[in-house]
Image 1 (tube, rainbow, N blue to C red):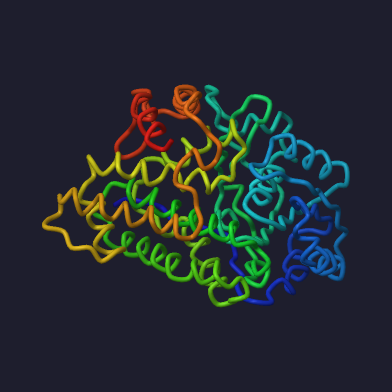
Image 2: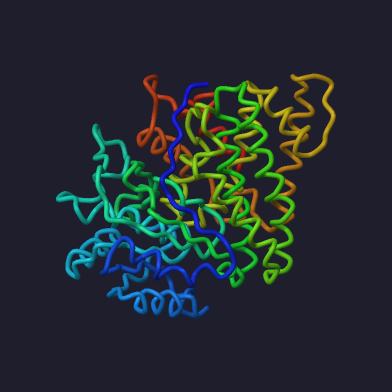
Length: 396
């Protein structure tokens, strides 16, 4: 193992912590652009509490509302223009992963003279990697993406049907303020999708790493087991604050760099394939992950059998005849897929209204956006266009 781990984001966690937003924001600016989504934060009263907290702390506040699920580059451009117009020196993201991702891109777009789409990796020879951004505070209202405490964002382009990522150290939020009370109003289906999303973040690094990372494996397995224990409780009773808190903490740990440090993860192939599919169909990101991940697992288990046997034994308590017991590995994947079904996630594209007519297009587009020196999708194993097509067909 050789790795550098650094996460400069201050984490403030706990029920009632939204009351600290103004105090924390005042350290970084006086004119805040408050980025929000489709209106749920206003219906729940969260927006008013956040807005008033900022104002009471002496900040001027300007709202950029209406960020879409699968946030669009048009919203990033609009938000950056607003921030410049109002002289904002701070961005505050109040919402789910889409809002936080858009806010990151807005923060980097404000000091950048070019088009922010330059920053998004979409097959261009040299994506612009931002080196500066306005200070950002993230206040997630959904436990899912982990975007609150990392330096990456995923943005869509509706005109070109592309969806991809930007990653740069300047995108780390200064503060991630996690108040589990803000997630109490999240509907059952979105709660379930959040559980799927966070588990997929963990399985991507768990299965696509270099191997022989026992401490990281135990971290990853702990996050998965916690999500599988408390996720169904949060889905069954949305008012269960302890379950909500455990799921939110798991979601943050799943993608703040701690679990996968040292794994040498070779890519996030399930995410990259899903990005292409949802760019065409605008489906909920985690719904696409729930469909693709188990199918990809069955493919990857053919070459990484021992890791999937470990997953089956440690997560589901199955007993293998040896480290290369393929039947045990596949049984573990079946159990995982059954778990996703049990919490209400789709496991086939047909459930999302997607047929097989564009499968070859999805595969080509995924590889156009990201590929290694051999033209393969990074992962363990790396995948050809034919491999991606096979996986997508198995997911129909």
